[in-house]
Length: 330
Image (cartoon, rainbow, N blue to C red; front, top):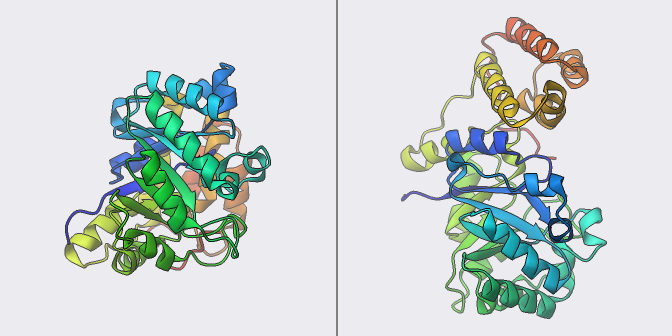
């Protein structure tokens, strides 16, 4: 099998610079920033602008923007372009209530005509390629992804990423790759289709490729606590062999690497630790009697206490291998 491009999905409070760097060093081909609010961007909110701090190691990287107002999204795209990403991505798929209730993200699936007009306006306003990420539809009664894909292609997007769930599903149930395949196999579609949803390991990745024929895979929750999943998948697709699961010692080394990268992009240790809390427990799934270690990691407020707890984990679990094969993405 030829090289299959692997994308790190944009994730709020996850795809910070440090995590992007780690995934890049472990086989991710393309990465995205966290979601960037168009309204916050045009109001020059500093916290939002910091999300667009890009580094050479990130490339190729997209800045992903979301919003409901066409004029604001056009202006935000122009501002994002000044940060010199490789492309701009439009968030038409996020199911989070705080985004949907303001008309952004997956809410745009309720008005595909407006989605098309917004996309056309943005494509015309910037020189960079524009892509989009969306879902199958709003709910089970409105799976309109084939129509949406054709509209977005007509609007000028260079590629389309599809998460195989509706907005109403959030992250429950299973992703429906048959509908992603329906888009990919639509004779009217000629742009690259990127498949996303439930990729939790190499075997699942191959299954999704075989089922859909997509041009690339996008991995989101499966990478949290397992940034090396990209290398695992690449090795399997190339050789047909599964790499052995990492030992706890290997994982502790990766967590320390993640911490060091985080410290390079944060101005104090506590903000670095708070950012890492989303990741700590996910690095050590299915270990026996791990609850107290998890609690101490999540309550740690100094780098010293984090490092001490990591050493304790290393001492207790030593050469055990961490089995990620049956870990839920929930």
